[in-house]
Image 1 (cartoon, rainbow, N blue to C red):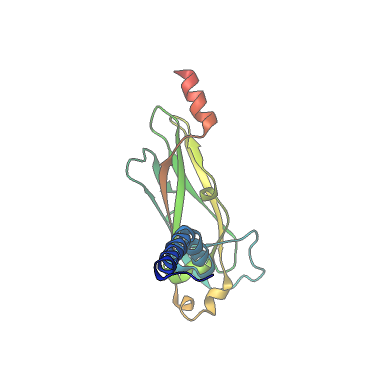
Image 2: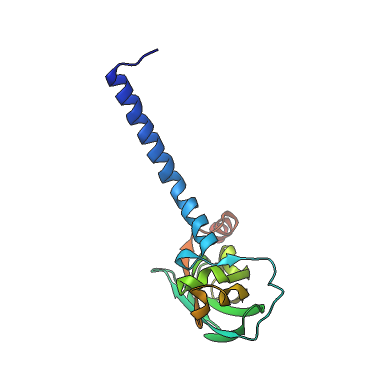
Length: 187
């Protein structure tokens, strides 16, 4: 079966549109995967356990907190800075407070700076993995368990990193259905 010029051009055009649409659909998950694998853009690693090696070398980890516009919470790190041994498991806390008279749900996005340290900063446990719901007037401390991978001292760029900043930004999300229903039942 042979196709005339107009039909072939139309099919090629549809193929290009389908291919470009597929790339657009896959771009977000592929970019997220790329950032997690390479540490590009300050994306951190996720681990279940710390490495076996703990080095004598230390690095300063700074903690930063911010809120997206219109997020009614107050949010801050409990300690602004820690001196940690590379490879050692560490625990830091952030504090969130809901000063409003309604329950508010939030989720945190995170980043590590400088970018070349992102691939060596691994979180074992973090509040950013789950949505957080704070009731009116509720104040909570949320833990982050982390380590700096010893491989940072062998990396061409990472070996010069002396300070790492872990930043979180909380943004408001819709209340879970159970929380929303409880709020409606009260009214």
